[in-house]
Amino acid sequence: MSVSQRPPDGSMTLPYRPPLSQVLETLGSHVLSAAHLPGDGSATVGEPVVHDPDEPLDERPGGVLLAVGARADARDVVLRAARLSYHAVVVKDRGADLGPLIEAARTSGIALLIAPRQIPWRQLDALLTAAISGPGAATTSYASVGTGDLFALANAIAATIGGATCIEDPQGNVLGYSNVPGQEIDEIRRLGILGRRTPQRPTNRTEYSRVFRAGGPVRFDSLGPGHTPRLATAVRAGAQLLGFIWVLDGEPPVVPGAMRLLEDAGRIAAMHLLRARNPGDQQRWHRAETLRALLDGTTSESAAGARLGLPAGSEVTIVAFAPADPTPEPDTAVASVVDLVSLCCEAWHPQSVCAAGWGRVYALLPVPPGTPCSRLVRVATDAVTAVRKSARLSMYAGIGPVVAGLGEAPLSRRLAERVIRVLADTGGASVALATDERVRARVALLDLAERAGVAVDQVIEPVRRMIDHDRAHSSTHGVTLLAYLDAFGEAAKAAAELSVHENTLRYRVRRLQELFDVDLGDPAERLVIWLQLRLLHLRGEL
Image (cartoon, rainbow, N blue to C red; front, side, top):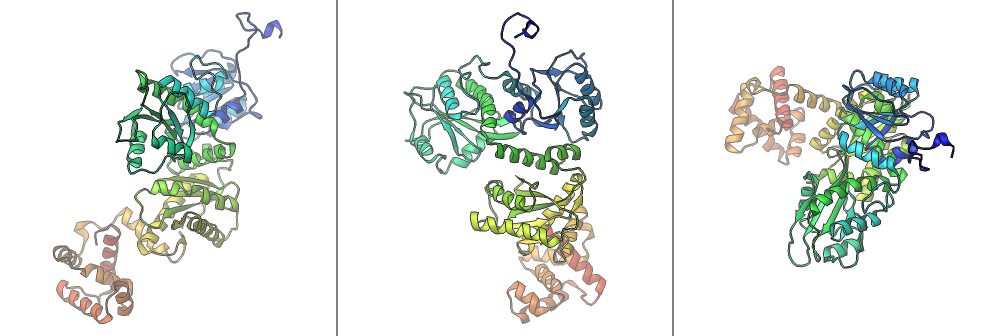
C-alpha cells in the first residue's frame, strides 16, 4: 500500500467500501433501486450522508447523499453532489417526474437511487450504513452472523433475549430457528420446526394480524398446556413486510428489556431477510413493487420505466385477476397464486410484471404493435386455467385496454377492474376483454353509476313507489321488472332468470303496471325505468 493510500491516522487499514451494485443487491428494491447507474455499478461507496437542504454540502469522496426534503431544487443537489465527489444521490419517489434528475445524474456521472416514499429516512440511513459497513463492523453479538444466515441470526437473537427464536416469512414458513442449549420449546414450536411451517391453529389469523398491525413487539400469554408465552415482532423494510420473529418466554425466562431488544433485533433482521432472498426472487419482488407503485400513483412514469427496463412510451395493458368465489381473506388467496400468474404472463412476454394487492393480482403486459386482442385473451385464459388446476381457485380475469405509455397503466387497471365487477355481477365467463361487445355496455353502466348514479330526488315516481313497496312488504316487483326489461320483454327468458313459471311472470308484470302506474308502452319511460333500476341494482339497493 502506498503512503498516499493510507488513512489519515496512518494505520494500514482502509475503510470497507463495497461496490454500489453489491449494496443495491443486498438491500433489494424494497429499500433502494437505481434510476441511473453509471457503468456496471462497480464504483465503491462510503458512508451515507443525510443532507438538510438548508445546510451547506460538504465534500465526501465516494459518499451516498440522502437528499432529505429535496423537491424542485433536487437537480441542483445532484449536480453539486457530483462536483463534491459523491458517488450516489438518494431521493424519495413521490410520484413526480424524475426525468430531469435522471438526465442530471447521467450528465454528471453520478448514480441516482430511488427509495420508496413509505420508508423513513432514519431506517434507510440505518440499512444503508449496515450494508456499507461490511463484515465485522458491528460491536454486538450479531457481528459474527453472516449476512443472510438466518439460523445463525436466530441463535444470536435467542442468546441476546434469552428465549428460543424462530424467523418466518410473511406466509408463516420457517426460515430459521435457534438451537441454544437449555432453552425450552413447546409443542407448537416443535411442530413448526418439523414441518418448516407454523402449524394451523384457530388463533393463527388473530395473532399474526395483531403482530402485523402493531408498531413494535407484541407479547402473547399462554393459551393453555403446550403453549408457552411468546414475544413477536414484524420485520419490515419501509412499508414492506419481510417476515416475523417469534421468541418463546419459557424456562429460563427472557431477559429484562426483552421487548426493546426484540425491536432492535427486528431492525437487524431486515438486512438479513433482504439478503436471504435468491436473485430471481429479488428481481421479481423489485418489479412487483414498481408495478404496485405505478398503479396507485406513487411513482412516476419515468421512474417506473427506469426500474422495469421499459421505455416510458411502451404500449401495455393491465390484466386484473380476482377470486370468483367470495373469500374472507382475498389478499391471502391472491398472494398464493401470484407466482402461477407470473409464469403464464412471462411466457407471453419476458418483461411482463405481476403483483398482488388490494385483493387482486395485476399483470402488466407489454403489447407489441399489431397484437390481436385474441392473443391477450389467450394469456389470461391460460393463467386462469393454471390457477384453477394447481391451486383449485376459480378466478375472474378482466383485460384493460391497451394504452400508449406506462403513465396510462392506472386507466387500463380501472377498466380491467370494472370488467371483473361485471363478471361478478352477471356470473359471466371467466375471461373477458374490456372492449368486448359482451361487456363494454355494462362497463359503461358501471362508469355511469360511479360518476353520477341516481340521486334520490331523480328517481321517477313509479320507480320510487315500487322500491318503497318492496322494502315495506319484502316483495320483489323491482327485481321482476328489471329482469323483464333485461330480457327485452321476452317473458320466457325473464321467467327462466327468476326461476318462476312464464305465466307467473306475465301476471306479476301486469300487476306491477297497475299498482305503480308503470307505462311500458312509452319508450322514454321504459328506458328511464330500466336505467334507474339497473343503477340501483349496481349500488346494491335493489
